[in-house]
Amino acid sequence: MAPASRLALQRPVRANVQLAGERVFVDLLPESWRGLPPPLPQDVVADLARRARLAEEALQARIPTPPPKPLALELAHLPTLTRFSMRVPEGVPITLTNEGAATRLRVTGRYAIDAGNVRGRPRPGVSALATDADENSASLILTPAEGFVVTGEREDGIYTLDVIRKAPPAPPKSTEVAVPDAPPPQDTPLKEVSPKEAAAAAVKVVPAAKETAPKSETVPTRLAGSGLVFPFAHLPPAALFERGGIAFLAFETADPVAVPPPGATGLRSLGEPKRFGALTLLRFALPTGKLLDLAAVATPNGPAWELSAGNSLSPSATLEPVRQPSPAGQVSVSVPMPRPGATGWLDLDGERIAVVASSALEAAGNPKSRRFVDFEILPSRHGLAVLATADDLAVRSDLDGVLIAREGGLAASGTPKKPEAALDAPGTLIFDRTAWDKVRLGNVRQTLRDLFTAAAMGPAIERGPARIAFARAAFANGFDVEALSALEAAAADDPLVAETRETAILRGVMLEHVGRHADALKALSVPVLAADPEAALWRAHASAGLNDWTAAETGFQKVLPVAERYPPEIADEMRATAAEAAIETGMPNPPPLVRAMHATCNR
Picture 1 (cartoon, one colour):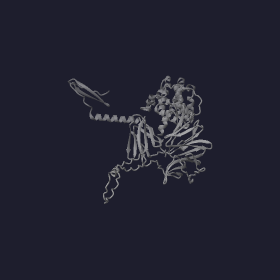
Picture 2 (tube, rainbow, N blue to C red):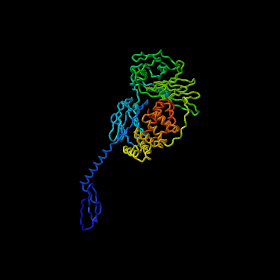
Picture 3 (cartoon, rainbow, N blue to C red):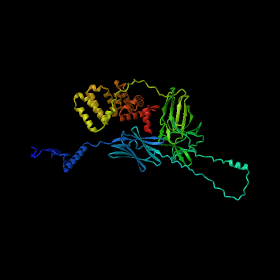
């Protein structure tokens, strides 16, 4: 029986009862009491605070701290800069500070910067790269090389760091005027001057000295190595391309070109240099197992081009052809190219090849053969080489690129493909952004546990939808195998669930994510999904997983805009795969979404 006390009071009072843990405090206040009631004793308050702190620590110990969310760091090269980029959620604070010679990018929150895609790759202009993280932030530390500077910019959820070369300081403008020294006075008798001679002397003007401005010329800074060095008084445009197992080196110069001895390079010239208009052409046998490189170098006697053979290549830019339809419906192809020279035509064993050399110091070429109906762009390390298959093909160089056209327009659409079934208009997608974000926030473990309990212990009539909900949540949080197992269990137990469009597409998507590309393509190719644009999108993704790049490129051309309504993680995955398919097939005119993705990754 609980202890009790009975008090006899002489006058009416008000009882103020306060609970403090296992104890009860009762204050007997007169009816005339005004103001706040008396507080608890200080030792009681301190004990309650201590117990609350211990309870909170025990609760946090039972719920482990979620791991930091990774932020993937990407690297892209441009002729004038090296770009690092990563996607950062909106609203996350980012600061960029200088710490001595290094630049620190700090992302506030539980994040970790993943630099795995960057390590081991060439990073021009960067002497050191490091990552750091603590409980409240993650940092990327870049140390630029001497003569380079780091700049940052945030746009459309992507933060970019550009490593660019410092602009040389402008020479100060001089305001000094050279005044010749006055000749020493001479004791000469004064001569009487007539009025006519005085007037002629007054209007006589001394001609100004002719201004001579130094001619600005780009000079290479890389020193010559052990390759074949071709020195010139002024660096001419050059091109290096391959055809039929032979490397062709072309210089746009009227000066004679001497072939240096092969030395240790093993590069042997196939005959003497030949003249084709403004071009001087040299031929070399391709060495087995070696890669040819052409670089602008500096020698004690001036600039030069160096042809070398090795196991690796220096960083270079890719020349990407772009289709340009005219208002009249005629099609031409332009190839952006830095500092192009004039177009020269070669007649090589009955083949007409247009060569456009480049005087850019950084290598810019076409890494693989690109075939069109009327022409073929040959593999080149530097410059552009176009094999004409049409007699009236025209190749013209401009200030910033090369234009390839015909009088009646190019037939550059490629080989016609067999017609496919028309796709329906996109409807409700299987992945909703709001639902996707909801299951990824908060205590994810507890969310999955609750959904799993509902899927396992709920009424039989409700287990099918509950298992679908658990499969969606597990897939959104990266548990692909668990999600597939729950989905297949729901389809096996409930035939109505198995026959729905949602289940069919979800099964194909999850099969694709666990690496079963052939099974995913089969699941997404059933007749009920033949005209479904969302199923067509994932069929293209599965075709890319099977290295069927032609089918993947065809599918992405039609339905890639559907991915823009997906959550960002899936949309980025689709755009990256579509960009890879466009590169693998050498598509001259990829969709706008693919062009945007490709430009972002190479900036």
